[in-house]
Length: 318
Image (cartoon, rainbow, N blue to C red; front, top):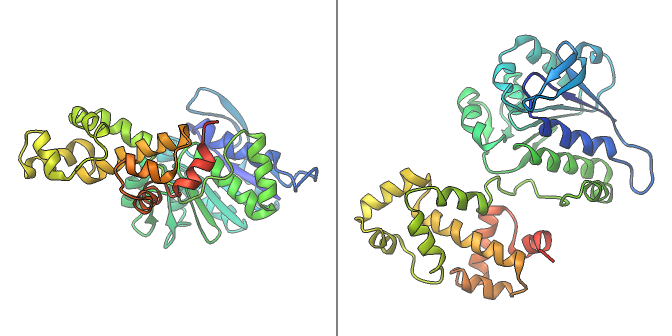
């Protein structure tokens, strides 16, 4: 099955290398033959510079006008902001997409798919930093900023960098079965397979954002009092602010409500305990202020897209 990767100046190397390696190594289960052939193409072919300073060799897109094509992948990078306005590139991608059985984008490559009209009326995602741009520039696209990848019919889109590898593994699982995808994940020493619905925003990343804002002292206090009453009234009093002023200042500083901030800190604490301890989930739920396992499960599914037990099975540090 031919898989074609479209590149342009200033792509992110890992947006290409991760998914490309998955397909280049994928075999039918066991010691079967390679399942895919891969190629890297650009508008005019030749050397294409990436944002890391490394150049890659590519074939011209025109060489594939009549050749068999199964999967078309448009990679991402800062160069997508220029590439999406290149009528020759957008037209060529649209023509190739019309012959492909499956079309995909990694990261900001979604902007180029959208420019070609391929995402109109479809659900799509991209790197969280580009979601607002995608939504503004292409209002006919149903942008979902949270998932690491999405499939809408024959169109797949993914968030940035390593999410492209997750998407590629999911495609292999769809084509060849879970066993073949699991073998590739093991060869790449990566997890098999993060669900597409898992959030781009891990609790760790949320915690980093919280630690950098003016309420860092309050967040440190919250982290040491997770089992206590952490309603917004309590937090406002702790911050020595009126309720209204506190709510307004908190959202402005963190981009989230106080309740979401507390949830992020609690989920992060539970995540660390699930990774590093053998404590029962019920005990972790109580320690982190969720009250019971069901409230912990709902928070994990909402924030991470997986249950606490699934998270522990995937990320437990032995």
